Image (cartoon, rainbow, N blue to C red; front, side, top):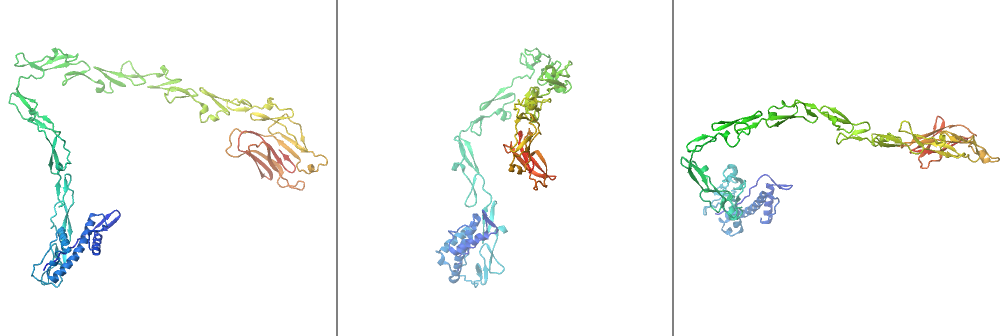
Length: 618
């Protein structure tokens, strides 16, 4: 009786994901099984994850379902007919064989003619009456019927090599390489690393003068031109001469010296060689001392020379030392040998001696070592005043000048008018002068005060410099004057004479004088009109409205006059051209008062009117 193949797919634990979606291997396998059951084929299997492991699991589980169904049919046929001959040409036979070869699952066939029956209770094989067996890669469970997969990876029974990872499958295992092959190698289909022949594939970088020779994992560039004897070839293919006299040990016989030549060397017999300070005698048999002190060249450069055997020495002058190596008299740097002990400030070495110097602001004293303070003010370095200090000097300026920030010696005039407080130095206009300033006033109407800064108003009415007519009164204002002429209203007459000069608080009064039978005039409650002259000089800008004039009447708020109440009115009749003034009426201490305020500066002449039922004031 023959038995068809039963193929099972292995499942792994873990999560696979691509992007933000994660799938377990169980999800991948279930998707493949479902697709195989529904479509009966696995060639158009859609992938649910970009993971290669999930794709393999999907394919294996899908194929496992198809093969499991086909093998189930084969088992049933084997039980009924005792052979699988009718399935050899079927699609089940072809697919099952391919899958079994891929997963290395062995097919077990029971010997023909040995008919044993287990009443269909065995999961894999029936090897005897009521005795079950398992396929290769499985072991029988304790129930004696079902089979359990053997984990070769866990037991260490796989044949995976070093660098490969063992993955258990149902009834078998797979070996997957973990480490890349590295530079110069490529991975074959059999999971092995194969050397890349760079010379054959043409991916080497050998020049035209070199031949490419492949090595394991790399290649070598070998020069085409070969060098002859006595030469060695460098990395660029050039032939370099070999110095045999250096590379070889005693290439010449004793008594000879080695002389290198291009590509070879020669040996010459050794002659008498005298050392330094000697020369060969006339007969050429011995070495004689050379008297360097008597030679044509001056060896000690002006110092005394003393000859010695094979050498000489110099008797150096003061400030020099003899150098036994260079055999010369060398200058002694006294400044370096005795720092801070020779000069007070700076020390400069000279041949055989030294020289002291001083820093800026000092001069060398008579002993040639110490430094005395230099009075720089004697040379007049400053434009105005100079003060000598130890080692330096300081320039300063007279009043009205300041020291320049550029050279700290020149005195520059201070523009007092341009200073932040310049606007408060003069009451009108400031004029800068070298080292000082002066103030000026307007040409007309003012004169400069004794303090030289303030401007005093000229009273043209007092000095007689006005141009008012005899019928007019002169009223002095800041910087000028006004000629005023006031006529009493109709039905009023003036009290007193017209003054030639009006003071700042003078008042012109007009009393009611009705014509006979003028009932309207008699009934008019205004008995008198008063004109008060007020000058309002201001020399500053108002930031907010301020009170300028305060008018207080003697009229009580509550009283009787001709059986009627009083009605006081305050109003501006003239002069408020720019609407810069206003009047506020209020009650204070039982009487009417008025406040006149403004928001601009200057000199104004206002005509105010204060009226009640009995009195009118202007």
